[in-house]
Length: 165
Image (cartoon, rainbow, N blue to C red):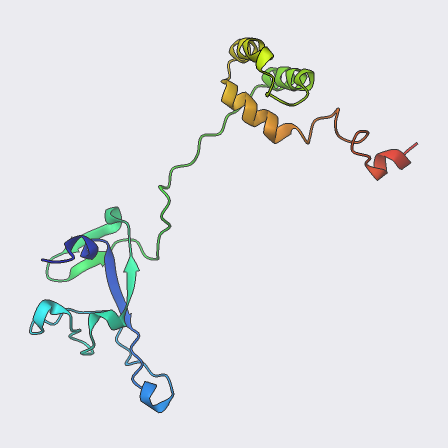
C-alpha cells in the first residue's frame, strides 16, 4: 500500500472544498470528517460528500498518539494538534548559596571573561572545587554578568544611583 507511513500519523478532518467558487462565493458542504468509500479506486473518495481526500483538512499527529480502530481507520486519542517537541523538560542547574557566592567572586576576579588561556588550569581547579563543569560555570557567568553587584549602578552610569545622596 503506498503512503502507509503517511497514513499512520495523519487524519483527514472536515471538507474544505468550495462548491460556490464558480459563482465567486464560498460555500462548503458541511462534511465533518473524511470517510473512506470502499467502491472508489484507491479509497480516495469520501463516502459522506464524494469529494477527493485532498479537499479534507489534514491533521498530523505524533505516531504515539494514534490508535488503530477496527473498520474506522485511524482515530486520534488526544484532541488538538501537538507541537513537534519531545515534551521533556530541559535540566536546570541548581546552585547552593555557597556555590553562587564563590562563582560570583571568581567571575569578578576573572573580569567576567573565560578567554584567558593562561588561567585554564586555575579555572578547571575552581570548577572541580565547587562541583560544577567548566561549561556550566561559563553559562552561569554569561547569565549573571549584567546583574552582578559590582557592575550594576556606578559603572553603567545609572541615573537613579547618581542622583541619590
